[in-house]
Amino acid sequence: MKSPTLESLSSIEADGSHRMIHPADVHGRFTAWRRASALLLLGIYITLPWIPINGYPAVFLDVQERRFHFMGLTLATQDLWVGFFLITGLAFSLFYVTALFGRIWCGWTCPYTVFLEHVYRRIERWIDGDATARRRLDAAPWSAGKAMRRGFKHAVFILVSALIAHIFLSYFVSLKKLYEMMQGPPSQHLMVFGVMLFLTGGLYFAFSWFREQFCVILCPYGRLQSALTDDHSVVIGYDKQRGEPRGKVGSTSGACVDCRRCVQVCPTGIDIRNGLQLDCIGCAACVDACDDIMLKLKRPTGLVRYDSHVGLHGGKTRFIRPRIILYTGLLLLGVGAFAFSALQLSPVRASVVRMVGAPFYVSDGTLRNQFLIRVINKRNSPSTYRLQLTGDFPPQLSISGLTETLSLAPLGEEQKTLVLSLPEAAFTQPFKLQVNVTDTTRGDTVTTRVMEFLGPDTRLKSNEPLDPKDFVQ
Image (cartoon, rainbow, N blue to C red; front, side, top):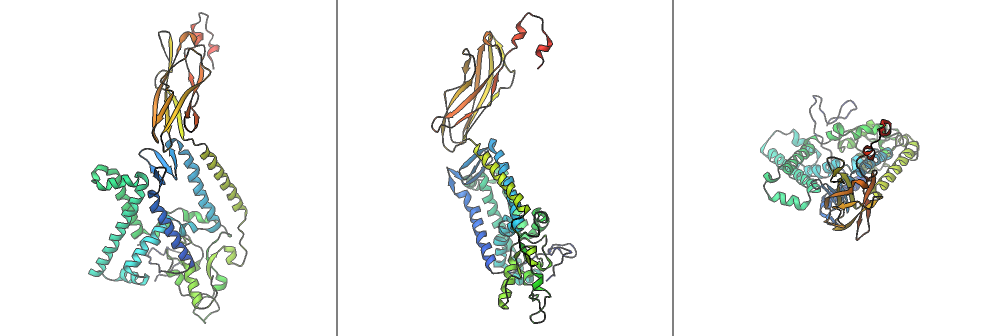
């Protein structure tokens, strides 16, 4: 087995080729908790498209209709600005957790780790055996038995990848629509079928061959670790003061017996005794492995443990420090911004824009302005709205196209043409108007942006000489 060093990646051979890492299985409290959390996360991923809330799946990103459903809340395209606060808030929360507990996200809740460690590698252990058997199979020459085992394993990998891809698609097309697509020929929905094939191929490649290299090479989060953590961040570390000098039992005063068990169980193939490294994902497999050996030797556990750099050197870890205080303030500010923006959402949206063309028309002594009203019902139930024109407008103003009530289906929308007419003689200057849209049942009211009724400048009708200064705005 290759000895990990700080000079090169454990997953890369001396000639630059990929070296497949086969971590040994491990048992312990952290492993049990990780598996329980992984099962919970997998259960959430699988069941969310099945859970109906207000007539739609709990999470349904309906790209085709431009409607996005989250736990009963429906967002129209115009509401996606709220997503900025949500996404940036989640990203900053991840940075906040990293400052406190290092890469605990990577080892415990990252979807890539969950699928790799708790789905694909469990399948591999079931088919190929333990780590020793897997390495022996890799080194063995090709035979009928090896080809059959390899073929069966990769067939299962492809099947699982296709299943994960289909579940992912159900978040965008719904399970009902996905089932209808699966029953018909691929030619009827080539784009969705192509996306499914691409996702299946990408998942199969990543989890059957690329594996831990994604975390080490592609994922930028690991490289941010050095900037987000400090000496008081809780990470996984090796207690050198207690463990060194290492050696066989009875041959040295150090607690480490150099069994290399921590190396054998590491999913990225590093030696945690070399210090905190970019490759470490904080999964705690080495903690359980070392504790198991210490218990068998009847020695205190914790030689490899969750602790800060200060704690590993005998100091006291400080959780409250300037960085955390700053992060907490920024996080509370972000939560406040998201809450405020969410409160600005309305179950109905209305807008008024001037129709394309001239700003006004004059015909047979009548001045006419034309607008387009758009009303969107963002509820998952039908609604009826009352439309009312408001503003300081002349009594001679004639309104056409503004019906008293408007009924919309769930998540429906409608556009209506609003024509405002006024005798040209009654127009003295532009005036401002708005449209109030009120839900007749629930009382929700929104007001459109101000629109302006325009007409010819009355000063142009005078026979007096024109002064250019009067027309300078």
